[in-house]
View 1 (cartoon, helix red, strand yellow):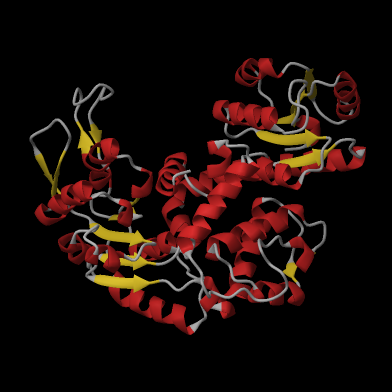
View 2 (tube, one colour):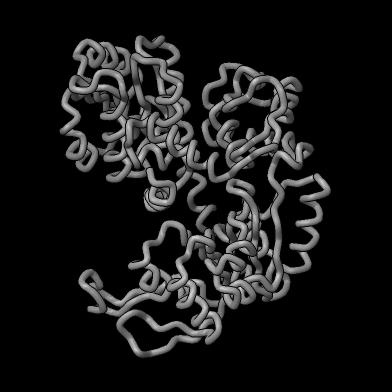
Length: 454
């Protein structure tokens, strides 16, 4: 879309900013509306046909945290998830800029802005909007093929990963139950999807269930479904996740978090190969391939009698163990290049390369968060870098002091607890923001907080 055809809405509590922005943009755009009161946003977005919104991060009752800006960004995207939003702020806060884009904003600008740069940013965003519209019809027709090609490849040149991949190729074609082991962030979900996409069931659903985010009360309803009237909020019949995966694959992540009572219920379903919806007495046959994953030492749990031995044998016909990133440094460069290309395109940033000095720095780092941490680090660097080549200073690595971090005395639970504590401190106890930063659902974060007594 051309800027001359665009309808723009500007929301800011500063009248001078509104006047200056409108004066600048009305020479370029078809329509420019301004509004001082963000409370009017829901009405304006619902009843208007805006192509782009310029949204201030901070309003009068909240000086510089950006909290109001994030609130109104969420409201805008709830009403119209396709609308483009550029955040504007007088505070050049790195975390705020990253959070804005991760929360759904298309870009951000700092006040006071340069007029030419603001216009150029808006033009780029509108061009991206046009490209998305043109691509939507093709995406609908080729959705299955696109999903397969985007997540089919697993990057791993190291001997350890090559061993996992060769085993996976042999296992994928069978219907054998698979248990994937590995630390948080090593790519267990991606490997499960790889197994599905190389199986006989690849054209059928791949259903992911995060067991760590399910409370005991929701377990049966979520996995097995329910009938209308089975409980207070059961207003209609609902299929469970096992039914949704009919003919395909169901991936039960964080299976080590299940209580013994829930393990017994799951075992019964797997043994009988049928489910019964909550509130019903009719059994429904199962036709699914089962893949499970955990970051826990499940054999120790079996020995400690915190995980049922019969369920353990049922789910791990084949066991795949994903190595941590610190044990496969030769995979760091190709992984970084992969994520660079991905985020360069996603955020429309002119970052084309990674310097050899940065590659060396990454290979010396211990990566306690594994691939997920690498992914987030590259994403952050791509968003913030002002150069075409990423340099060492562009990458923020926690606890990196120039020397390689070793795994001696490495305690995953202590590390996870510390990361949660730091995230909660950073966001002043805000569970939603902390969960987003950690890459967890709110429910999963609550479970971990309870586990660590936080």
